[in-house]
Image 1: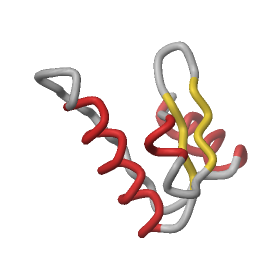
Image 2: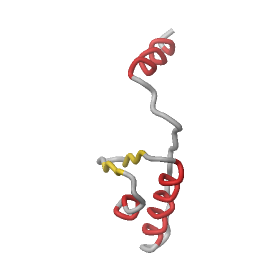
Image 3: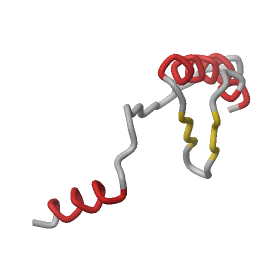
Image 4: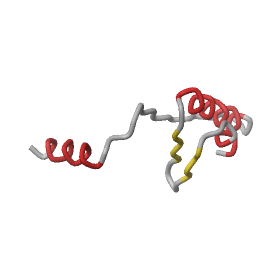
Length: 69
């Protein structure tokens, strides 16, 4: 994640995932930097989920309520 953070975005590392927020160019540069750094250790698989925004708590609650029927 140091490689990704080096691209000027804030990276939060969790136990099972990492979160990075920033502008599109910075985020894609950070993903590329992280992949390049990981690849230097051998065969590498990276799974990335991208979002153009985070839903509000209210939006999440509405979606969850709708999925209950």
